[in-house]
Length: 127
Image 1 (cartoon, rainbow, N blue to C red):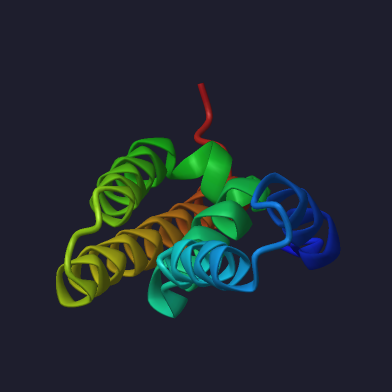
Image 2: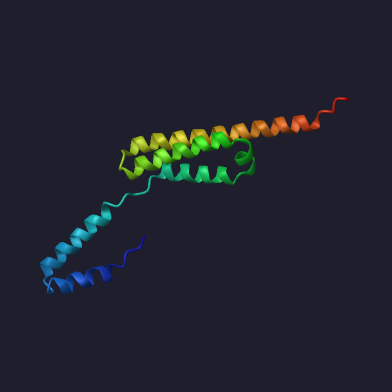
């Protein structure tokens, strides 16, 4: 997110009557506010990407829907914890749960693909 510093500081300067001290205090307050914005959580970002990729995988989407839903719910939990300023360690743990559930969905889909191929290669039983 890019912040246009010139625009942000022009109005406070005019409002403060050009006072250098007032302007410095306003700028310090703005910088403090910007610094308090949440930095990204790498593990949560990875978990989000993994869920998104799994949702775009046709096999996973079609053959492991419930497992993919579980991963999505775990991601929702991790996102909520992050937005509520949960500890980084807690959010990392929740992100790991997401990653494990995505892996389970992928394994489930792969196993079902193998099973479907096996079934499709079996000769039909005479009627």
